[in-house]
Length: 295
Length: 194
Ligand code: SF4
Ligand code: SF4
Image (cartoon, rainbow over all chains, first blue to last red; front, top):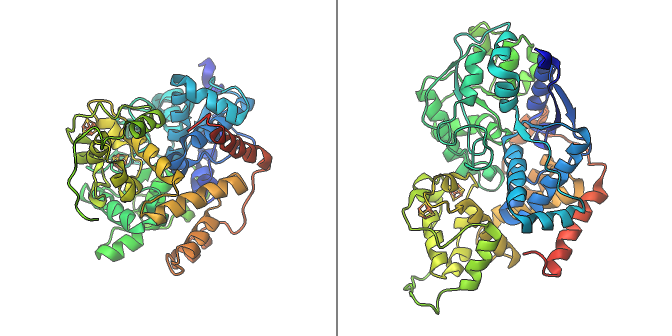
């Protein structure tokens, strides 16, 4: 039990969590405070470059991530990341730079510093399920999410590619379900949990996003889910913000709330709606939560 | 595009181009044996004129101009499904990155200007602000792409929910980011990096 109060991380929120996904940031900070896990924001962090940077300029993408890791080193400890896309980029950078000497030297030149390789890059799920552990998570539950049927949506980047994020099995992960079952929810088996939502085409090709996200919403509904849980601001934008538009295009109705993982886990630990940013969700989750007597 | 017969000869192959792609992507183009598994799982294959396995095959045959002239590489969502499932460990998602980089460098003969425009604005935002400024990204994209009315109803809804910030917190350490962009440009000028 000596380690109970020693969990503490450098925290990289990323751009979305400071803008359109503010509720993910808020609920993460509140949940971690409640669980007694330390989070210190990396001072002066930069955008990790997300998909657009590695799409056309790998060296820039690697350099931006390496710079952030250098900044994180000043805080110390492992790096906690909430956004699946930031997580994938930072983790991939660490992997590429440890394997490829040529690229590492180029990056060191670009950031004018030795590449920091000490801390691990960890997704929040990893911290909850493994560092804290499911047993201790269970102990923190004051209001089990009994009767709530959740479709856990991994999307593309949480577990891929195989050799990089190493969060869980790439084709049959269970870490989201494990965490949710620990807080008393039910999880549904559904076909689209690893399918792509169209990601960053939301700006340039919304038609693509509407088609792919429609298939995901359909699959969750067919499996009997009450709601979807995500770990990525882009997935959230596509499934929650665009849901009404998708309903219009396909002449259907889902009214399917889309939660961030920290919102659902936070709810189970007794955090109130205001501490979890539930009012920022576009599809109103209140009717569902009241019906299940979770609020 | 007019249908051209594909010629299989050493003359039509472009070994230099393939080497560049392999250096950039850190993966082997030659290892692919055309099982098609990448394309079977690709969520974007239906939007592409050359699905992922054909992109690799065209590369093997030195027909890269066909790839760069089309929209396939710009319709790849970087979801990594292909790389995950390839039995030969061809990291196809990285090949897509490399091809986009090479197309980008040549100011892109590609038709997919919207995706390129979004990428350019995104990177410009990083250089100017250090972080993404989503509101500005969406606004400038709509103006530059001529889609003034696009997502009109989404805007007010997002602002009321606090999802689109009117003002942006700039990173305080902007000289640092400018230096990174500058050094990379210099390395490329000196031929130290692709
Ligand atoms: S899965 Fe791999 S080997 Fe099979 S066609 Fe695609 S790249 Fe080639
Ligand atoms: S990374 Fe691109 S090519 Fe590969 S499966 Fe995803 S969308 Fe298709």
